[in-house]
Image (cartoon, rainbow, N blue to C red; front, side, top):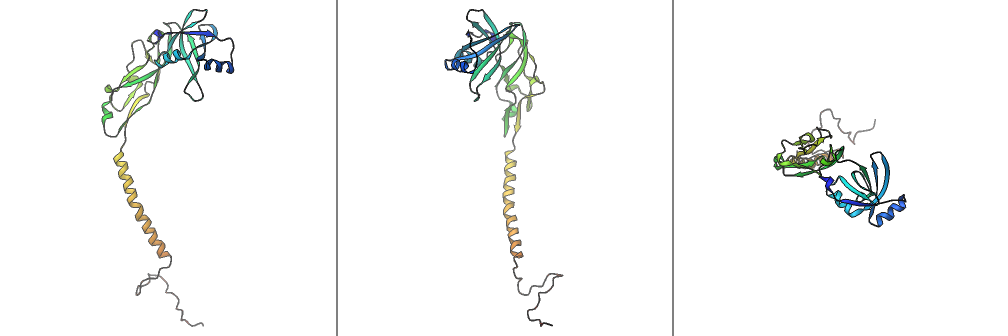
Length: 239
């Protein structure tokens, strides 16, 4: 479980503000705060590399050793990222007890291949990257493994995901986690070919009509259309 993660060593922050936070990050440390359990919030900084390593391994609960104080068991409550979204600039830690019931978002890890995904034109889409769960702090899983080899049908909902003992689902039980869609590429190709074949015929017909409207003379001996008036004879005498 994630509560077995290594302890982070932290130092108190006496000076707050953007300028001092930038100095900490430049020195390889990340600004953070510890709050909860009816105690005063504590502004700290932790070493960035070990903290990021713990987060990348799915740690939700981290032990924080503050200089001059006791080790505190903390839940990673919130991560703030830079404007590019590629680096953690601030962490919120909430004090917790190992037996305390909490709600937490846990990442989903997909393995295996669904039988329906082997059909021609089948595309698998992952609809959810995390699941919202409720459990004791000591039972928080690092991730939820979803074996698609046991998937039935084209949609897997959150209620169908097998959860560890002592963990309950908070997310919408009807929400899709995985969806399989078959793309009819061949039918789309035939429709495109048909449209391409029709286009030249339409253009040719319009061209013939345009030439006829331009005043082309009828062939010799051709009879005028019914109801059409004969052209005036240039030899008619003026009255």
